[in-house]
Every structure is written in C-alpha cells, then in structure tokens.
Image 1: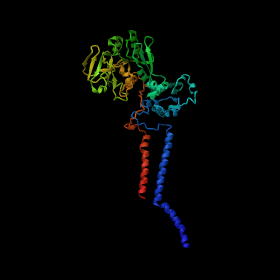
Image 2 (image 1 turned 180 degrees about the horizontal axis):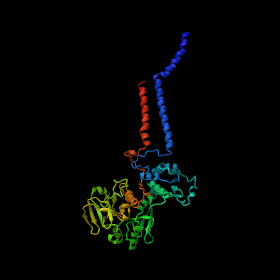
Image 3 (image 1 turned 180 degrees about the vertical axis):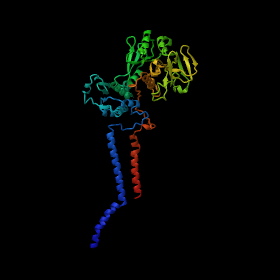
Image 4 (image 1 turned 90 degrees about the vertical axis):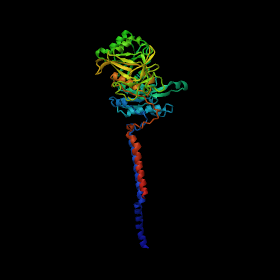
Length: 505
C-alpha cells in the first residue's frame, strides 16, 4: 500500500514531462510561435508604414497614364526648388474626399496630386485651412479678392497667388444650363499648381506677346496652354502700343488684314534687338485671304528665307490620313531634331489642316531656313487660285523656321516660324491626346525662348481612365513589391511550415 503511494508523485511528474515532450505539444507550440511571429511582423510593418506614410506616398498607381502621379518634368522641377513654398487648400480635406457628387473622382485625383507635390519636395508644404473655422486666414493677404471663391493659396516668401476652381477644373456649362449643376469635364491641377509655384518662386518668367489689331482669329486655346506652362502672355496692338521689352516671342495668329509698313519695320527692328537678337515670331497665316494681300507679312518672312505657297497639301498616304476624316486633315512627320529632342512622345505625329487644309511653306536661299514638319512623299498640291490639283514629287513642308543673327550655330540669332495651319494650335488639336501638338508647340516655344527655368511641358490626365499600366513595371515601388510578393510570401511560408509539421505528427 505504501509502495503504491510512493510511486504516485513520480507518475505525476512523468506525466507533465511527457506532455511537454509529446510531438503534438511541440507541433502546437511551433504553430503558435510562427503565428505570433507573423502577426508581430505585420503589426511592426503597419507601424513602420504608418510613420512613413507621413513622409512619402504609400500607394501604387497602376493606371496606364499614371493618373495619380506627377509627371517627370514636374518632379524634376520641384526637386530642384531652393525656396520654401506653402500650398494652402482652402477647404477641409475630408470635404474633398467625401464629396458625393458626380465630380468625386476629379476631387480625389486632385487631392492625391497635391500630396504628391508635398511628398516629392522637402521645399513644398501642404496645408488645409477650413475658412469656416478660420475666417480671418486670408486677411493676411491683402491682394486676395475675398469676394471670390478660391480653392488654393500658394505662397513663397512675400509672394503669393490664388487658384480658383476654374483654374483647376474644366467645367461643362451645358450641364449647368440644363440640369442646374456644374459638371467637371477635365482636370489640370498639375499644370496650374506648377505654374503658380513658378510664379511665386521665380524672379522672372518668360513673356510671350500675341498680336492684335489685324482682325486676328481667337488664339485663347494656345494662350491658355502657354499660361498653364508658366508663361506670361500679353496682348499687344501695334497701333496703340509696342511689344514689351520682356517679350521673347510674338505670335501672329490668322490675321485677316496685313500689317502696315511701319509695323513691318517695328517687328523687324524688334527681331534685330539692337544686334543682340534673341527674339522670335510665330506666324500662322490666314488661308481664307489671298496670300498676295499680305505684302508686308510676306516681306517679313521672306527676310527669314520663307514664303507661303497659296495652295493646300492633300495627303494620299494612309499612314498620314485621319481614319474616317476628309483629306484636308493630315498627319505630319518631324523634320528637325532641335524641336524634338526634349519630346516625351516622339512616336506621336502632328496633325495639321482644318476645314480646308495645310498651306505649304517654301524655303528660300535668302536666309538659313529649314523644314520643321513635312508630309509623306505621296501627296497632291491643290492650287487655291486655279483650283487645280496636281501630283508632287517628294514631300511638302507644313511648317518651317528661318534664322538670322550673329551665329545660327551657337543660337545667337532671332527666328521666324511659319506654320501652314492655324488649326495646329486650336483647342480641338491641343486637347487631342492621340496627337502630339501640345507637347511639340510648347517645346518649340521653350527652345525658341531658351526657357530653362519655366519651360515645363505638363500634360492633362483623365482620372476616369480604367486602363491598367501593368507594362510599366519600373513604376512599381517597394511598396508594390511588398504587397504583391513579400507579405504573401511570408504567409505562404508560414502555411507550409504548419502543413509540413501537421503532416508528420
């Protein structure tokens, strides 16, 4: 009896040891340990990325045209900023993100792009100011019109400017007239904010002048694109004033009347610039008026080695025709390297033409003149005066440039550009993503004016795009690799360990 009682403690002790030494117990402990480690790793990563999210953009943009990322030209500029810039959004961020209107996607995209400015430059600081809670905020900025609705205030030192909703979004007025609300149809926040940053941070901006007084066609679409890309645009009437001393380019857009002799001399003298040169003219002739009714404009471009051919270019090559369109709208190839070396989309062609067609530009031997845009070698020339159509051997020139100065080779010159179609910079063609008109003509202006500080080519983006840019693998960040590979890999490894352990129990 006593011997049995003496063995009981030993039996209990062996039972406890046996429990901890049992395969099932060890497997369970290993499973719990792995589970705890995985959970701890996920919690730790959440903490780390929670901290990093305040310093960098913690999301992946897989849309085809990177709708929620800044373009490289913008990134290059803001990363080189040497002055502090503050962007004040005059609204509560939650109000932007919780907007339930049909414009919701545009507000979300605009808000994300604003964070991109903040994330990608240590000189740019983003703030949200609720004017309901802080109604006196704008009182510190006396030049701000407080009777208007502003979306943003952008400051740099003592300089500041505002952006209104119409500066950031393009609205469809038809929906307002028919349904009583303003529907957003486009977004150009990146252009507007970059231009505003340039305006407040740069001491000087390049000025471009647009000639008026000759019954010119409306050039507001091109002027708006120039303004979006940080140019100061002025209107000049040579009957009542002079071209600004700061201006680097004069645009003459589809004039219905010729300039007079005095204006011709004024422009010629301005191009000469007291022998310093550096001034430019961009001329879009009017094909609705006979070319011989512009003797002074003809003389101006002849001084720079060019003349307008009173005819139209009729394309016959299928690769240069617009599908389902008439022959007067056609695509042109680049014929120069100077105005294409900075292009991002050299694969896109330029569209010229319009209701009638593109007027050929001839180069002369009176100055250094070269072709900029050329047709295919399968074209007809339609003579406007005789109304005759004839075949042409070789290509025809749709745009050309002539130069005069101390040294054309080193860029110490003035230039005149003649484009055979004023439709080239119309709103229809500048907003057509299929063609490269916006990038090409903005880049041309940047090159002509040697605009290194403010010459940034920024394109618009459509947040409603549903395409995935999965081919752009280089755009995926470490966060993308983490979400797609690392975390799923850890979970898979943990699962395999558990499965193997359980199988051998």
